[in-house]
Length: 594
Image 1 (cartoon, rainbow, N blue to C red):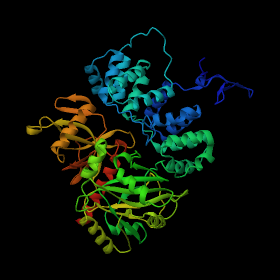
Image 2: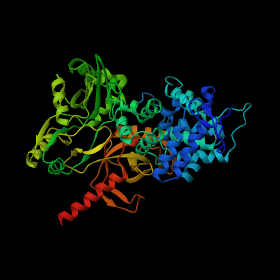
Image 3: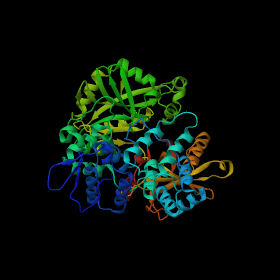
Image 4: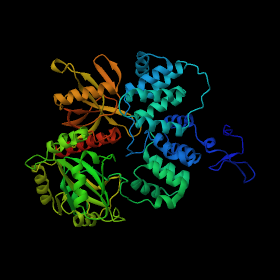
């Protein structure tokens, strides 16, 4: 039986069934009767893509959320934000463009050249898929297949994520072919966008928070605070639908549910930080390592990266140290893990990345790349949330329970001279700079506030996404070694090129990068390959200048890659707006120096 979709009918959809106009009786049906078709969310995404009005986008999404069965809400929220699973999930699709492309071509009986032509016309993988589906007839089936439901898509994504071992690619392609065989052009377009993480509707988490509040009649501040502790906004939406305001207000930090990290803005000097912090600031060494969140409950320990991925298996000695030495029955602490040399001096970040890449050889890596954990914050202790306490109190409690675990070097300063000496001391010790923290500030997960300020002695490097590459010349002819670097446009979700470089990587890294980029390639133009935005790199540069070469109007001068950020996703990359802020500061400095 098909659900009633007539706009003139007085039937009202509810979680119980349908309420007939003029009475309070419900017609009840099996749960599958009320489940939403995937085409409906694709149609919503299409509407979001075509409107630039924030209020209209929130209204459209809120109305959609109201119509859902509670079991669908978490999946829908993830899909609308362009990801198959909640942030921090153990599940990963691990599908590159070649694995995705071939099932599409088989379903519509097209050739790789047809796909390349479509990508050339649209510049977007999802739009190119839509174009091909529209222009080609899918083969007729002997039996009529029912339309895809949202929960079916979620379940197939889960099956794909759990495919491991021999013939994994073949098995993933079979699942994908089944999905696309039951898809029309619009459904196929958004399946591709979800799988590749390139939704590009302009609908971001901030708007989703507003939509959840509007859909379930909740205060915006309550939804925002719940998102701080839930690990992913999809969980907040599920709780809001089932338990309302009381449910989301009950959310607190809890072991093994990672919290989005608080972020820092940039300050040009210690003096600026002291002024912004009203005369007193607490300086800590800014380490050149991987930020981690350590969760402990009894003898069990889990370690999460800054993008909320479980990395416990990559650093067993750190897990053992926390279990053995961190006092407190249950705790959530934050810190930085660095690689150290035999002399105790910190090694560059690239050494640390070897741990994440070679987890299967972890015992060997423990000898080659020893790690050191330095803690700097405490968010939860023995059933009590500490995020609302002032920073200095949290730090004091951390000192009490740290045991043999090292804490970052810290100095509370009132005068710029003392702060500059501490900054220079950090640099001499092999660290990046310092973080200045407002002593009375709470911990605000996911926020980038003036309460935390990072200070480095050079221009702030940018985390950018590689969107294309060219084969080099001479001895580099076999490598994709000239990279197009892009920043994320917060309004459109697109990645805008801001520079190009061939500098910074070793021969081994060039080979590894070439292999990855070939897998991510979506279109080739002579020696140039355009790729799916996936790889994030840290980029140093001399300055940012105005340029008509790129659509964003800015370009990096003398850009060079300083490290590959495997710990960051494209959504974590710096934005076009951030590049513009740095450019504006440069202009101000020039005026002052005249």
